Amino acid sequence: GGFKEESGLDYYSYPKYKFEYGVKDIHTGDHKSQWEMRDGDVVKGEYTLDEADGTKRVVEYYADSKNGFEAKVKNIGHASQGGIGGGMEGGIGGGYGHGYSYSKLKKYN
Figure 1 (spheres, rainbow, N blue to C red):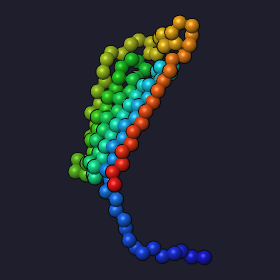
Figure 2: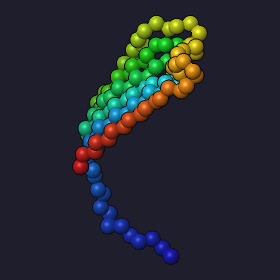
Figure 3: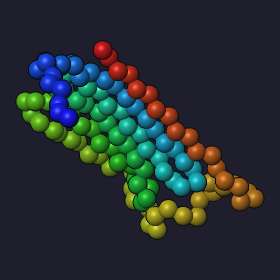
Figure 4: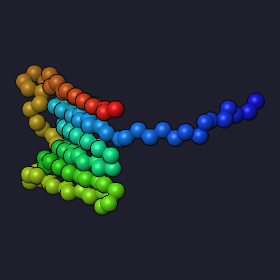
C-alpha cells in the first residue's frame, strides 16, 4: 500500500458564474426566486419569497474581500391577519392549481 505522491502543483480556477431559479406552487403557496453572480472575489445577488402573512421579503446581498458580506432586507406589503388559507387556488370543483419552477446556470471557464 501507500500513497502516490502528487506533483505538488496547485491548480487555480478563476471563480465566475451566474445562476437563477424560481418556484411558484399555487397549491402550497410556495413562491420564491433567487439569482446570484460571482466574478472573482465579488458576489452579488437577490432572493425573494412570499411570507405566510401575505408580505414579500426581498433580500439584496453583496460580498467582496474588502467589505465582507452586506445584505439589505425589504418587506413589501402589509401583513394580513390569519396567514395563508381560504384562497381560491383550486377554483370551483376543488381541483388543484399547477405549480412551476425553473433554473438557469451559466459557468465561465
